[in-house]
Amino acid sequence: MREGLNAALAILRKDLVLEVRSREGFLSNLFFALLVLILFNFGFDPGSAAIVEGKAAIFWIAVVFASALTLSRTFQRESAESAIHALALLPLDPAWIFVGKFLTNFCVILLLMTLTLPLFIIFFDVSVSWRMWLLAAVCPLAAAGMAAVGTLFGAMAESTRLREVVVSILLYPIIVPLLIASVQLMRQALKLTGEIENWHWMGMMVVFDLIFFAAALVVFDYVLGE
Amino acid sequence: MAPIVRLSGVDKVYGTRPVLQNIQFELREKDRILLFGPNGVGKSTLLKILASLTPPTSGSISFYEDRAGLRLFRRRMGYLGHESLLYPDLSGEENLLFFAALRGLGRDRCRSLLAQVGLDGEAAQRRVRFYSAGMKQRLSVARALLHDPEILLLDEPFNALDSGFVSSFLQWIRSRTVVMVTHQVELARSVATRQFEVGNGKVVEKLVGAA
Image (cartoon, rainbow over the protein chains, first blue to last red):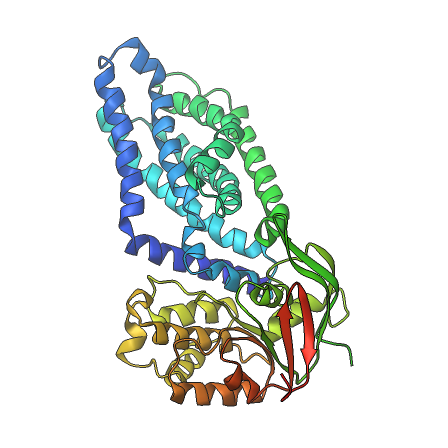
């Protein structure tokens, strides 16, 4: 257990170092999210009913598409010089390799959300209230769900020629429930008055994360072998 | 004593092209095996099957004839692939430190290996992307030897290495159980105890000194 956890943390450290060194990957994703926010900001009248109703969805559109780009690169570094073979030959349960890559994707997606959120607040003139604390739970839960599903699909798509397309095709339909829950809870967070309702969406996000994390742990050995 | 690896009736097919057919093969302790043959006949594929990197299409593979033998085999085995298995944007030292961390080994082991393969000092701090082919191969050798494996599976191990380093490498090989795939057969024969010719989907043992 401890050996596996150390290996997962070593993979996380290595991936974060490489992510910092190849900044263009993360920055291009962040700029993509920024572009989506700008386009929606200029495409609708500020304060219009469409913006008031739809701005929570706009945030998640920006974040999800930018995250998909990150997820499609999950195993790119491992395949450049076939370093994945060195990982596959470790005397460890391959699930720990998944955990390491999952942690990397979780951190990168959460950072992407954290940097996109202030821009979203500025562009859409969001009034910051105490209810925004809800996002401190929603964003990590959404990042964990996307990372769990995306890490597995990133591994599956690595040997294909159209990696980005394959990850997107597989990822988006699966994470629809997670996104609906995220949008519903964000709408609650952006309201200025009234009680916070629909807590069951939070429960659904937790269940989604647990199911897909567990499923990915189980099937990752097979995916790595293929 | 049980063989380290046993292949029984192994076939490997890529798409519709059969590469290996009905292979029977055993690797035993202290074997130093040379696999040779022309390009594209399945030598590297056979090595990857032995390394547990690629599953056979059919047939069986066992490690120490034990269901739990694979993990022991991976603990004892070092693999040098056709590619470097390194990260180009990490330095030589960072690469070794990463693989050492994965196996719970310390910094001292990395430093001593880097010195042994002649990549200490400034070279250790340089990113692998900027290494020459020979330096990259030396670092790959260091990575494969990092956990002091008793079994080595080597794919073209002498590529891009100078004669001085090859001599040291052959010394390392002499004290271990080895399977090597190489076109530099004369070098490999100087340490091999058994040799096999791979071709037409078959693996045929040749007498040492008679091939």
